[in-house]
Length: 333
Image (cartoon, rainbow, N blue to C red; front, side, top):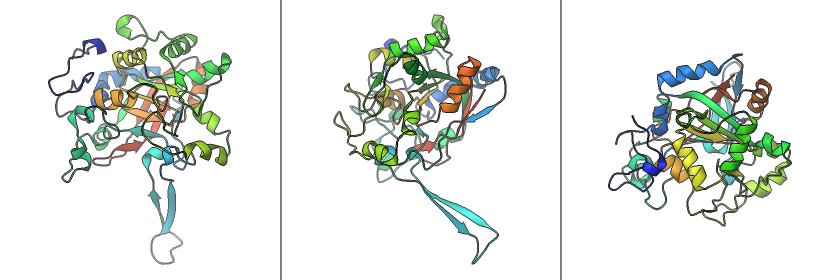
């Protein structure tokens, strides 16, 4: 299949402008379709030591959860009256309160109201809902491929840049290019002579979680529990990737199969533009978004190896019609 550049997108009649619903009317995988067996096998060539690095936080972290989401609750129960030999777990949680994937039912293209590939509000919460584009579709195939880490936090520290983690501090495309250059990476698609391969999974480390780990509960609560409302006056404010034409072209034309970061929203929140990257990535392009991933150990290992690519695998939760999933992600270096 030919993969069009963003400037060459020609949506069909009735589809939103800038949409790239190119894998058929029944598709529920979006850019995960780029993770072909051939590309997954090729990604294994990045493995040298075989060391495994989990990328998920404990389910009860961060605490308190961002966006005033539900706290994780864990209860251990015995099997049988007065049993001292057999136990079960019971979890009560919002999978988006910790390291997570945003699924295609999470965020619509606001002007049209469409979620990915024509999924509607009625499909999700109408009187006769379907399971269209639920997280179970991802779970049925899994997520695997070559991960590519851009360590903005390391670059910022080396260049005496002081990010504002609790404001919509934007990491620009030029910032990412500079980060890549310090890592010996040409941040252009391979088709243009660069190092980015079709189907790569882009990870951006902002330093948000490293900073949060240095704060007290009260200091975090002052931000994580702010009033959440959609729009520029949102009390929830976080560092992330900038909303810009350069970023849009980069994220679209690189044909990443997924993106993720250690920030609460991947993109700077709230947006300074009249759109959000969530709309473009999830609803229009079918690109999964990972948030609040623990990238600290991975960043250290990549710097030590002087290699910023690795094998990445994730097993989304198999919940029919689900909106999101805990990340369940693992890097192998």
